[in-house]
Image (cartoon, rainbow, N blue to C red; front, top):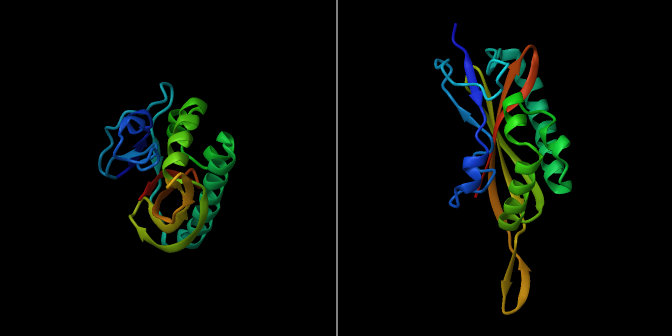
Length: 176
């Protein structure tokens, strides 16, 4: 049986200056065939997503929209618990309170406050659904000793899987 394994990588991403701190936020995935990924939780195996069924599409899309709202609200209010509410256990471990605080400082400086988003679509990947949104953030730049907000379009990509009958976020990316 093919299984999807995911594990979290948050700290190496913070050091990568070329990427937004959430550009590959807490997610590195193996392919569904690869079952060798190590779990970051010492006493627990890696989260394994169940194969998505065709009738999961509507419920998974509803979940993805609600999960993204929690993530964006958590980012806006610096609420670690809200941000992590729908994440896999591996992501929750990697995005501890200290890492979350550091990620938000860098992200907010680069992207500015969230303004809005438009749903672009989804991809079915067997074990996951991949959801895409175009979001706008408004970073502030200094020009002639004045601060001016600029529009910053960002592609948000979220991987959603199903574990023990419950949908979870397996990964999220914010790409400028």
